[in-house]
Amino acid sequence: MTPAKFVEMARIDAARHYLESTPLSVEAVAGKSGFADPERMRRAFIRQLGINPQSYRDRFSLSDPYSIWAA
Image 1 (cartoon, rainbow, N blue to C red):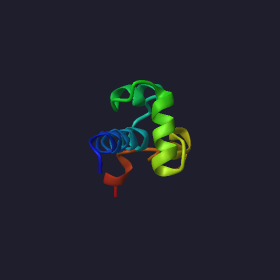
Image 2 (image 1 turned 90 degrees about the vertical axis):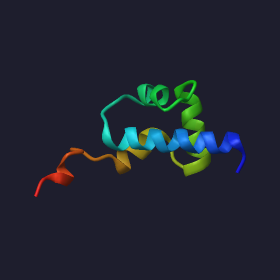
Image 3 (image 1 turned 60 degrees about the horizontal axis):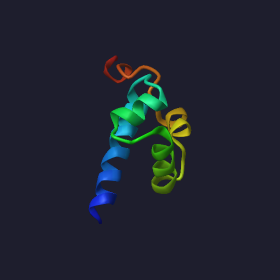
Image 4 (image 1 turned 180 degrees about the horizontal axis):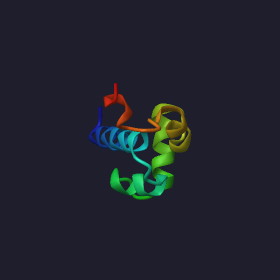
């Protein structure tokens, strides 16, 4: 794996975490994850995961991230 690919995957992992567990906008997630802009994050998601960030959030986000602790 090249250094650039490693950095991209680390950014995608961070973005996945934010998309799954926070209500931050896709634009805010891109910035917090280290992407230069939301379009670069979108392209990286499609290239690596085959899905855009909003669709990823729709599929994998927790509606209440603290609900896993309730029981």
